[in-house]
Image (cartoon, rainbow, N blue to C red; front, side, top):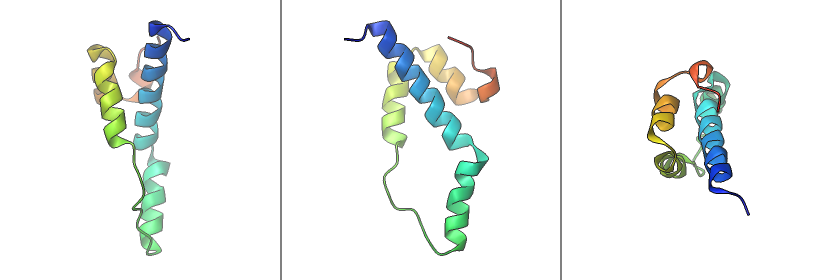
Length: 76
């Protein structure tokens, strides 16, 4: 069984990774490229789940993830 600290670190890592993916220009380009070819993504997304997880991690870390570029995130 994971400790509370291990779960928190995993949650922070997941929040960081999903935020970084969502901000990456290549990720956005996939949807633009699909639209050019007449395809619109209508599948699931992780927005609500990410926000719920962000609400569970320490506020100062969540704020850092939301407001700063990835290169400025502190090492845990």
